[in-house]
Amino acid sequence: MKRRSLEKIILIILGPLSLLAVYFFIANWFFYHQIEISRLQVVDLKHKYIFNETAATSSEIIYAALGDSLTAGVGAVDYEQSYPYLVAKKIAGQETKVTHLNFSYPGYKTYDLIRDMLPEAIASQPDVITILIGVNDVHNNDNRQQFKRNYEDILQQLSTKTDAKINVVSIPLIGSKYSLWPGYRVYYYSKSLIFNQIIRELADKYQINYIDLTNSTRQYSLTPGYYAVDGFHPAGLGYQYWSQIIYDHLDK
Image (tube, rainbow, N blue to C red; front, side, top):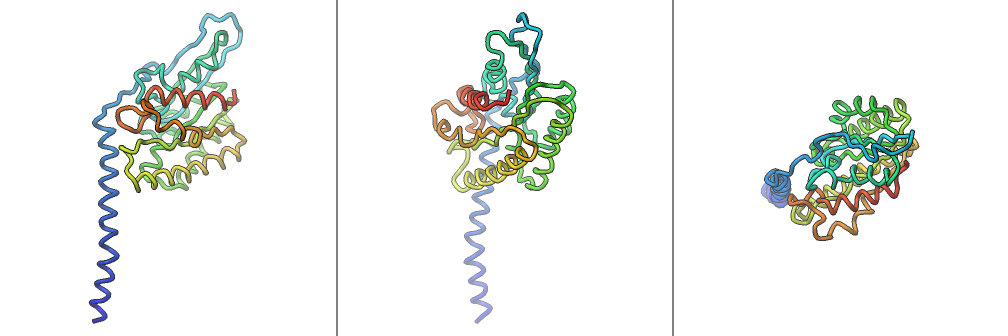
């Protein structure tokens, strides 16, 4: 009798848990399926952009942007709509010569950035750096301690091997209600906030400027045209908002 009661209790517990697991599996599949079938293209094809090239000045600012697909401008029609290009354009204004270098690639996590992009970024000896990385670490369920080690490695190398003004940008809460289902959205957002706390603590440790893109973009996320067709990457309008927020808080 006791055994049957125990079996019933187990079934009562496992039933909802199994349904929840199936729900999260489908939500995760749908999210990545939408991105895949949207076939968004990488729009950064040059990696180097010069503003006011013929400006009559002896000074030049080298601005390097490090990151993943969000920094590569995926979702925009062309790279001129991306947030790094727009930030570089704002820095340049009408008279300042700015060389903008893009060190990013879709799907990159912190480890990929360290392996493939960081040495080249350091070699360019930039004057201003922005780093927006971590979205893929969150979605691939990377361990937070490993993320912290990787992110600290990035900051440690950049702060000791360059004289650049370094700006770390928080992981934004992105994804429309059509791409991130209820429950799945809460999980993703919660983990993003945990990883952002790690980034903020490391920025404080290395005395590096922290730009809160997360809370600053909440008011814009429901704006029509904010997202690209995949419902996850920003479109040109979204990146326009981002560029203004980043520039306004940039250590330049």
